[in-house]
Image (cartoon, rainbow, N blue to C red; front, side, top):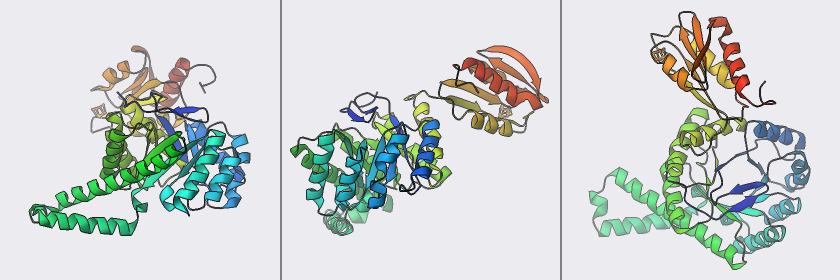
Length: 382
Ligand code: SF4
Protein backbone atom coordinates (compact mmCIF):
# COMPACT_ATOMS: atom_id res chain seq x y z
CA UNK A 1 0.00 0.00 0.00
CA UNK A 2 1.58 3.21 -1.06
CA UNK A 3 1.99 6.06 1.37
CA UNK A 4 -0.57 8.76 0.61
CA UNK A 5 1.08 11.93 -0.59
CA UNK A 6 -0.30 15.17 -1.93
CA UNK A 7 -1.06 15.13 -5.61
CA UNK A 8 0.89 17.34 -7.98
CA UNK A 9 0.11 17.72 -11.67
CA UNK A 10 2.96 17.66 -14.16
CA UNK A 11 1.38 18.58 -17.49
CA UNK A 12 -1.18 15.83 -18.08
CA UNK A 13 0.43 13.38 -15.61
CA UNK A 14 -0.63 13.20 -11.97
CA UNK A 15 2.11 12.47 -9.45
CA UNK A 16 1.34 11.33 -5.90
CA UNK A 17 -2.00 11.11 -4.13
CA UNK A 18 -2.51 7.50 -5.18
CA UNK A 19 -1.73 7.99 -8.91
CA UNK A 20 0.32 5.20 -10.54
CA UNK A 21 4.09 5.65 -10.06
CA UNK A 22 5.08 7.68 -13.13
CA UNK A 23 8.12 6.59 -15.14
CA UNK A 24 10.50 9.24 -16.37
CA UNK A 25 13.81 9.67 -18.09
CA UNK A 26 16.21 12.35 -19.27
CA UNK A 27 17.53 13.05 -22.74
CA UNK A 28 21.24 12.79 -23.58
CA UNK A 29 21.19 15.12 -26.58
CA UNK A 30 22.20 18.78 -26.52
CA UNK A 31 18.82 20.37 -25.86
CA UNK A 32 19.53 23.21 -28.31
CA UNK A 33 19.66 20.55 -31.04
CA UNK A 34 15.88 20.48 -31.26
CA UNK A 35 15.70 17.85 -33.99
CA UNK A 36 17.79 15.26 -32.14
CA UNK A 37 16.17 16.06 -28.81
CA UNK A 38 12.65 15.67 -30.18
CA UNK A 39 13.63 12.43 -31.96
CA UNK A 40 15.00 10.99 -28.72
CA UNK A 41 11.91 12.05 -26.77
CA UNK A 42 9.70 10.35 -29.37
CA UNK A 43 11.70 7.13 -28.93
CA UNK A 44 11.24 7.47 -25.18
CA UNK A 45 7.50 8.01 -25.60
CA UNK A 46 7.26 4.85 -27.70
CA UNK A 47 8.70 2.66 -24.95
CA UNK A 48 6.54 4.15 -22.22
CA UNK A 49 8.33 7.20 -20.82
CA UNK A 50 5.68 9.37 -19.16
CA UNK A 51 7.65 12.51 -18.21
CA UNK A 52 10.86 13.69 -19.86
CA UNK A 53 13.57 15.96 -18.52
CA UNK A 54 16.08 17.91 -20.57
CA UNK A 55 19.25 19.65 -19.40
CA UNK A 56 19.29 23.42 -19.72
CA UNK A 57 22.89 24.50 -19.19
CA UNK A 58 22.79 27.68 -21.32
CA UNK A 59 20.26 30.23 -22.57
CA UNK A 60 20.49 28.65 -26.05
CA UNK A 61 18.95 25.54 -24.51
CA UNK A 62 16.26 27.45 -22.62
CA UNK A 63 14.94 29.40 -25.62
CA UNK A 64 14.14 26.27 -27.67
CA UNK A 65 12.01 24.58 -25.01
CA UNK A 66 8.74 25.93 -26.42
CA UNK A 67 9.66 24.54 -29.83
CA UNK A 68 10.44 21.13 -28.32
CA UNK A 69 7.25 21.12 -26.28
CA UNK A 70 5.13 21.71 -29.38
CA UNK A 71 6.48 18.55 -30.99
CA UNK A 72 6.10 16.06 -28.13
CA UNK A 73 3.15 14.69 -26.20
CA UNK A 74 4.58 13.96 -22.75
CA UNK A 75 5.27 16.59 -20.06
CA UNK A 76 8.56 18.44 -20.41
CA UNK A 77 10.81 19.19 -17.43
CA UNK A 78 13.73 21.64 -17.50
CA UNK A 79 16.75 20.68 -15.42
CA UNK A 80 18.46 23.82 -14.14
CA UNK A 81 21.61 24.40 -12.12
CA UNK A 82 23.18 27.65 -10.88
CA UNK A 83 21.50 30.27 -13.07
CA UNK A 84 17.94 31.24 -12.08
CA UNK A 85 17.47 33.15 -15.35
CA UNK A 86 17.52 29.84 -17.20
CA UNK A 87 14.64 28.62 -15.03
CA UNK A 88 12.69 31.82 -15.62
CA UNK A 89 13.14 31.55 -19.39
CA UNK A 90 12.23 27.84 -19.33
CA UNK A 91 9.03 28.67 -17.47
CA UNK A 92 8.23 31.40 -20.00
CA UNK A 93 8.69 28.81 -22.74
CA UNK A 94 5.82 26.77 -21.29
CA UNK A 95 7.52 23.79 -19.67
CA UNK A 96 5.50 21.61 -17.31
CA UNK A 97 7.94 21.37 -14.42
CA UNK A 98 11.23 22.87 -13.42
CA UNK A 99 13.87 20.86 -11.56
CA UNK A 100 16.28 22.78 -9.39
CA UNK A 101 18.67 22.17 -6.53
CA UNK A 102 18.27 25.31 -4.40
CA UNK A 103 21.63 24.49 -2.82
CA UNK A 104 23.53 25.37 -5.99
CA UNK A 105 21.45 28.32 -7.24
CA UNK A 106 23.30 31.62 -7.42
CA UNK A 107 21.81 33.90 -4.76
CA UNK A 108 20.16 30.90 -3.04
CA UNK A 109 16.87 31.80 -1.47
CA UNK A 110 16.33 34.97 -3.45
CA UNK A 111 16.62 33.03 -6.73
CA UNK A 112 14.44 30.21 -5.47
CA UNK A 113 11.75 32.71 -4.60
CA UNK A 114 11.90 34.27 -8.06
CA UNK A 115 11.49 30.84 -9.64
CA UNK A 116 8.68 29.91 -7.28
CA UNK A 117 6.77 33.09 -8.13
CA UNK A 118 7.10 32.37 -11.86
CA UNK A 119 6.08 28.70 -11.42
CA UNK A 120 3.11 29.74 -9.32
CA UNK A 121 1.95 32.25 -11.90
CA UNK A 122 2.02 29.57 -14.61
CA UNK A 123 0.67 26.93 -12.23
CA UNK A 124 3.46 24.47 -12.95
CA UNK A 125 5.27 22.01 -10.72
CA UNK A 126 8.77 22.20 -9.33
CA UNK A 127 11.10 19.45 -8.23
CA UNK A 128 13.40 20.28 -5.40
CA UNK A 129 16.33 17.96 -6.00
CA UNK A 130 18.75 17.54 -3.13
CA UNK A 131 21.82 15.48 -4.02
CA UNK A 132 24.14 14.06 -1.40
CA UNK A 133 27.05 15.24 -3.53
CA UNK A 134 25.90 18.83 -3.37
CA UNK A 135 25.54 19.00 0.39
CA UNK A 136 28.30 21.47 1.05
CA UNK A 137 31.65 19.68 1.46
CA UNK A 138 32.73 21.93 4.33
CA UNK A 139 29.42 21.35 5.97
CA UNK A 140 29.97 17.61 5.68
CA UNK A 141 33.47 17.85 7.04
CA UNK A 142 32.43 19.92 10.02
CA UNK A 143 29.59 17.57 10.65
CA UNK A 144 31.84 14.50 10.53
CA UNK A 145 34.17 16.15 13.02
CA UNK A 146 31.29 16.83 15.38
CA UNK A 147 30.16 13.22 15.02
CA UNK A 148 33.61 11.89 15.72
CA UNK A 149 33.97 14.05 18.83
CA UNK A 150 30.65 12.82 20.12
CA UNK A 151 31.45 9.18 19.34
CA UNK A 152 34.81 9.47 21.08
CA UNK A 153 33.16 11.02 24.12
CA UNK A 154 30.69 8.22 24.56
CA UNK A 155 33.21 5.52 23.63
CA UNK A 156 31.28 4.41 20.52
CA UNK A 157 34.22 5.00 18.21
CA UNK A 158 36.46 2.51 20.00
CA UNK A 159 33.74 -0.09 20.12
CA UNK A 160 32.36 0.39 16.67
CA UNK A 161 33.43 -1.50 13.59
CA UNK A 162 33.89 0.16 10.18
CA UNK A 163 30.45 -0.93 9.03
CA UNK A 164 28.90 0.73 12.06
CA UNK A 165 30.89 3.90 11.41
CA UNK A 166 29.65 3.91 7.81
CA UNK A 167 26.09 3.44 8.97
CA UNK A 168 26.38 6.42 11.31
CA UNK A 169 27.91 8.54 8.57
CA UNK A 170 25.11 7.53 6.22
CA UNK A 171 22.43 8.42 8.74
CA UNK A 172 23.92 11.83 9.41
CA UNK A 173 24.26 12.63 5.72
CA UNK A 174 20.70 11.46 5.04
CA UNK A 175 19.44 13.62 7.89
CA UNK A 176 21.30 16.60 6.50
CA UNK A 177 19.72 16.05 3.07
CA UNK A 178 16.24 15.80 4.59
CA UNK A 179 16.76 18.91 6.73
CA UNK A 180 17.82 20.85 3.63
CA UNK A 181 14.83 19.63 1.62
CA UNK A 182 12.42 20.59 4.42
CA UNK A 183 14.05 24.01 4.69
CA UNK A 184 13.65 24.64 0.94
CA UNK A 185 10.04 23.46 1.12
CA UNK A 186 9.35 25.91 3.95
CA UNK A 187 10.66 28.76 1.77
CA UNK A 188 8.21 27.74 -0.97
CA UNK A 189 5.34 27.39 1.48
CA UNK A 190 5.94 30.92 2.74
CA UNK A 191 5.02 32.00 -0.79
CA UNK A 192 1.97 29.73 -0.66
CA UNK A 193 3.43 27.43 -3.33
CA UNK A 194 2.81 23.71 -2.89
CA UNK A 195 3.28 22.15 -6.35
CA UNK A 196 6.42 20.49 -5.08
CA UNK A 197 7.99 17.11 -5.77
CA UNK A 198 11.13 16.17 -3.86
CA UNK A 199 14.13 14.00 -4.66
CA UNK A 200 16.96 13.05 -2.31
CA UNK A 201 19.44 11.35 -4.54
CA UNK A 202 22.74 9.73 -3.76
CA UNK A 203 24.97 7.40 -5.74
CA UNK A 204 25.20 5.29 -2.57
CA UNK A 205 22.12 3.12 -2.47
CA UNK A 206 21.79 2.92 1.32
CA UNK A 207 22.21 6.69 1.79
CA UNK A 208 19.43 7.37 -0.69
CA UNK A 209 17.18 4.77 0.96
CA UNK A 210 17.83 6.27 4.40
CA UNK A 211 17.16 9.82 3.18
CA UNK A 212 13.93 8.93 1.37
CA UNK A 213 12.62 6.97 4.37
CA UNK A 214 13.32 9.81 6.74
CA UNK A 215 11.75 12.37 4.43
CA UNK A 216 8.67 10.24 3.90
CA UNK A 217 8.09 10.08 7.67
CA UNK A 218 8.14 13.84 7.95
CA UNK A 219 6.47 15.15 4.81
CA UNK A 220 3.60 14.31 2.50
CA UNK A 221 5.00 15.98 -0.63
CA UNK A 222 5.27 13.50 -3.51
CA UNK A 223 8.63 11.83 -3.97
CA UNK A 224 10.75 11.42 -7.09
CA UNK A 225 12.89 8.32 -6.61
CA UNK A 226 16.31 7.81 -8.13
CA UNK A 227 19.78 6.54 -7.45
CA UNK A 228 21.98 9.10 -9.10
CA UNK A 229 24.97 8.19 -11.28
CA UNK A 230 23.99 4.56 -10.77
CA UNK A 231 26.29 3.21 -13.49
CA UNK A 232 26.10 1.24 -16.69
CA UNK A 233 23.20 -0.97 -17.76
CA UNK A 234 23.77 -3.92 -15.43
CA UNK A 235 25.28 -2.01 -12.49
CA UNK A 236 22.72 0.76 -12.67
CA UNK A 237 19.77 -1.57 -13.12
CA UNK A 238 20.78 -3.62 -10.09
CA UNK A 239 21.48 -0.60 -7.87
CA UNK A 240 18.20 1.02 -8.87
CA UNK A 241 16.26 -2.19 -8.41
CA UNK A 242 17.63 -2.69 -4.92
CA UNK A 243 17.34 0.93 -3.78
CA UNK A 244 14.07 1.84 -5.43
CA UNK A 245 12.66 -1.62 -4.81
CA UNK A 246 13.20 -1.33 -1.05
CA UNK A 247 11.43 2.02 -0.99
CA UNK A 248 8.60 1.18 -3.37
CA UNK A 249 7.89 -2.02 -1.46
CA UNK A 250 7.37 0.19 1.60
CA UNK A 251 4.97 2.40 -0.33
CA UNK A 252 7.47 5.24 -0.78
CA UNK A 253 7.79 6.89 -4.20
CA UNK A 254 5.43 8.60 -6.63
CA UNK A 255 7.58 8.93 -9.73
CA UNK A 256 10.92 7.40 -10.62
CA UNK A 257 13.88 7.52 -12.90
CA UNK A 258 16.36 4.72 -13.36
CA UNK A 259 19.63 6.50 -14.26
CA UNK A 260 21.90 4.52 -16.54
CA UNK A 261 25.05 5.30 -18.49
CA UNK A 262 23.21 4.00 -21.54
CA UNK A 263 20.69 5.19 -24.09
CA UNK A 264 17.78 6.67 -22.11
CA UNK A 265 15.36 4.31 -23.89
CA UNK A 266 17.03 1.52 -21.93
CA UNK A 267 16.06 3.11 -18.62
CA UNK A 268 12.34 2.75 -19.24
CA UNK A 269 12.03 -1.07 -19.39
CA UNK A 270 14.15 -1.34 -16.23
CA UNK A 271 11.80 1.05 -14.43
CA UNK A 272 8.74 -0.88 -15.58
CA UNK A 273 10.29 -4.22 -14.59
CA UNK A 274 10.83 -2.87 -11.06
CA UNK A 275 7.25 -1.62 -10.89
CA UNK A 276 5.78 -4.79 -12.40
CA UNK A 277 7.77 -6.98 -10.00
CA UNK A 278 6.15 -5.11 -7.12
CA UNK A 279 2.73 -5.19 -8.81
CA UNK A 280 2.64 -1.38 -8.83
CA UNK A 281 2.21 -1.05 -12.60
CA UNK A 282 0.88 -3.48 -15.12
CA UNK A 283 2.13 -2.48 -18.52
CA UNK A 284 3.42 -4.35 -21.53
CA UNK A 285 4.97 -7.79 -21.52
CA UNK A 286 5.64 -9.60 -18.28
CA UNK A 287 8.23 -12.02 -19.49
CA UNK A 288 9.13 -15.42 -18.09
CA UNK A 289 12.02 -17.29 -19.62
CA UNK A 290 14.19 -20.03 -18.23
CA UNK A 291 17.94 -19.52 -17.95
CA UNK A 292 18.46 -22.75 -19.93
CA UNK A 293 20.64 -25.55 -18.57
CA UNK A 294 22.11 -28.94 -19.54
CA UNK A 295 18.60 -30.26 -20.22
CA UNK A 296 17.76 -27.59 -22.76
CA UNK A 297 16.39 -28.82 -26.08
CA UNK A 298 16.05 -25.53 -27.97
CA UNK A 299 18.09 -22.32 -28.26
CA UNK A 300 16.08 -20.69 -25.51
CA UNK A 301 18.45 -17.74 -24.98
CA UNK A 302 18.20 -16.48 -28.57
CA UNK A 303 14.45 -17.05 -28.80
CA UNK A 304 13.79 -15.34 -25.45
CA UNK A 305 15.92 -12.32 -26.32
CA UNK A 306 14.37 -11.93 -29.75
CA UNK A 307 10.80 -12.29 -28.47
CA UNK A 308 11.46 -9.73 -25.73
CA UNK A 309 13.02 -7.29 -28.20
CA UNK A 310 10.20 -7.62 -30.71
CA UNK A 311 7.58 -7.00 -28.02
CA UNK A 312 9.31 -4.06 -26.34
CA UNK A 313 6.76 -1.49 -27.54
CA UNK A 314 3.67 -3.43 -26.47
CA UNK A 315 1.66 -1.51 -23.88
CA UNK A 316 -1.16 -3.94 -23.17
CA UNK A 317 -0.37 -6.11 -20.15
CA UNK A 318 0.39 -9.64 -21.34
CA UNK A 319 2.31 -12.59 -19.90
CA UNK A 320 4.67 -14.43 -22.23
CA UNK A 321 6.80 -17.48 -21.39
CA UNK A 322 9.69 -19.03 -23.30
CA UNK A 323 10.92 -22.24 -21.69
CA UNK A 324 13.68 -24.62 -22.72
CA UNK A 325 12.41 -28.13 -21.95
CA UNK A 326 9.64 -30.27 -20.53
CA UNK A 327 10.73 -29.95 -16.87
CA UNK A 328 9.12 -26.57 -16.17
CA UNK A 329 8.14 -25.60 -19.71
CA UNK A 330 4.55 -26.79 -19.95
CA UNK A 331 3.65 -25.48 -16.47
CA UNK A 332 4.98 -21.97 -17.02
CA UNK A 333 3.69 -21.83 -20.59
CA UNK A 334 0.21 -22.88 -19.52
CA UNK A 335 0.15 -20.13 -16.86
CA UNK A 336 1.17 -17.44 -19.35
CA UNK A 337 -1.10 -15.77 -21.92
CA UNK A 338 1.25 -17.10 -24.60
CA UNK A 339 3.91 -19.73 -23.96
CA UNK A 340 6.50 -21.77 -25.77
CA UNK A 341 7.70 -25.00 -24.20
CA UNK A 342 10.70 -26.46 -26.01
CA UNK A 343 11.17 -30.13 -26.86
CA UNK A 344 13.61 -31.97 -29.13
CA UNK A 345 14.01 -29.50 -32.04
CA UNK A 346 10.41 -28.43 -31.74
CA UNK A 347 8.16 -26.57 -29.36
CA UNK A 348 4.61 -26.52 -28.12
CA UNK A 349 2.77 -23.19 -28.36
CA UNK A 350 0.23 -22.41 -25.65
CA UNK A 351 -2.37 -19.67 -25.63
CA UNK A 352 -4.40 -18.95 -22.49
CA UNK A 353 -3.54 -22.36 -21.06
CA UNK A 354 -4.45 -24.32 -24.19
CA UNK A 355 -2.06 -26.14 -26.52
CA UNK A 356 -2.41 -24.47 -29.92
CA UNK A 357 0.13 -26.36 -31.99
CA UNK A 358 3.60 -27.87 -32.20
CA UNK A 359 6.10 -26.05 -34.42
CA UNK A 360 9.67 -26.72 -35.59
CA UNK A 361 12.49 -24.57 -34.17
CA UNK A 362 12.72 -22.21 -37.17
CA UNK A 363 9.10 -21.15 -36.61
CA UNK A 364 9.26 -20.44 -32.86
CA UNK A 365 9.55 -16.69 -33.14
CA UNK A 366 6.78 -16.23 -35.69
CA UNK A 367 4.45 -18.58 -33.83
CA UNK A 368 4.88 -16.80 -30.49
CA UNK A 369 4.54 -13.33 -32.05
CA UNK A 370 1.42 -14.41 -33.96
CA UNK A 371 -0.30 -15.66 -30.82
CA UNK A 372 0.65 -12.51 -28.89
CA UNK A 373 -0.70 -10.35 -31.74
CA UNK A 374 -3.98 -12.25 -31.62
CA UNK A 375 -4.44 -11.11 -28.00
CA UNK A 376 -3.55 -7.46 -28.52
CA UNK A 377 -5.99 -4.71 -29.46
CA UNK A 378 -5.98 -3.65 -33.07
CA UNK A 379 -3.25 -1.13 -33.78
CA UNK A 380 -0.88 -2.60 -31.23
CA UNK A 381 -0.55 -5.97 -32.97
CA UNK A 382 2.33 -5.72 -35.40
FE1 SF4 B 1 16.71 -26.24 -17.80
FE2 SF4 B 1 14.37 -27.03 -18.74
FE3 SF4 B 1 14.47 -25.54 -16.51
FE4 SF4 B 1 15.01 -24.44 -18.84
S1 SF4 B 1 13.04 -25.30 -18.24
S2 SF4 B 1 16.22 -24.24 -16.98
S3 SF4 B 1 16.02 -26.09 -19.90
S4 SF4 B 1 15.24 -27.60 -16.77
